[in-house]
Image (cartoon, helix red, strand yellow):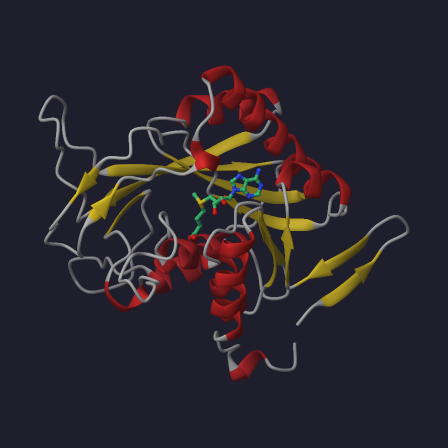
Length: 277
Ligand SMILES: C[S@@+](CC[C@H](N)C(=O)[O-])C[C@H]1O[C@@H](n2cnc3c(N)ncnc32)[C@H](O)[C@@H]1O
């Protein structure tokens, strides 16, 4: 599967998963100024209480994300955020974009660090989750949004405005194409798209909708460009990058999730119109 990109100092694997800590791998194994687009879905640092909801009607029992990789103190989390974004800054090309998935838990840290590195913030996309879980505490408004911060390193970023219009499901009143807005209404991953094990439980607790990645990769990269995901999880970014004819690099520290991604990517068909690229 892996093509190899040679440079004087680093032999960089394309279309491959690196297993390990993204902070080390970004610094050691990925060439500086080599990547057009980063999509990052980092730990939001929200795990801890292991809430469960048995008999949830929208897709079986619901278990709140409760993973070791998602538990840091507040000072640890800001240091972690700074280190991986610094690695991302190094590997991005001057026309490169970074999209970072956030919830209200980590939006502030991500924004502060992006500003410290002098990234220009282009949008904060709001993902309105149309099938958000009800709030069990009944003490706050029901959380139904996540955010995707789009930031750029230089002034010549890629933005495929017309292609986005073509894939925008929203239309003008007369049926004609419409600009893509920064509020995206779509459901949490469910049905056939949700990867599940033999016991019916999700194979990854935070699998992102393919539609989110389709919009981001279409917007900010071109065919043949390289898309990097430092927190690959179940491989959503790589799967969509492959479908859209982009090269991809995934980093994942959990071997079990890397294996799930590998299998999912292998089963993804590369469009025949792009076979010769
Ligand atoms: C929020 S999930 C990403 C989910 C992914 N977007 C998907 O669609 O499946 C974050 C992932 O990052 C991994 N991870 C956490 N810390 C990491 C680190 N320092 N380096 C690499 N991977 C890490 C976790 O194992 C987890 O699979």
